[in-house]
Image (cartoon, rainbow, N blue to C red; front, top):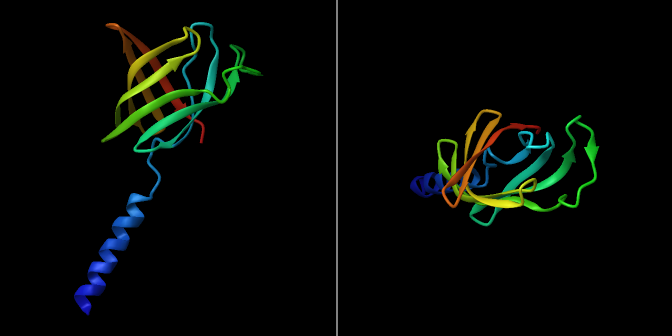
Length: 131
């Protein structure tokens, strides 16, 4: 009976750990684009990967603006690799209307985003956690 209880406890611990939020989940402020505009991206699980949706847009002065891109997916298929690394995903850059094969590196409340398309790589900058 004692062995059964220990096995059950270990199983419950593993199950609750599996349901814990990943550190990349949350709202992230993008780096300014070529025009100085930036956005808030809500990163959340989407199947086995992580996706990010634009929830707010701001102009170069920091004023919130209406945008047709609100609600659009900016990040998708980003797979956690461990140690704060996320790979094999895509990031759409609204200012250039281009989609990049991308990866992200999480360090505390900073998220470094980089991507490439047809051998041309772009630094997506460092995103900052909003919440």
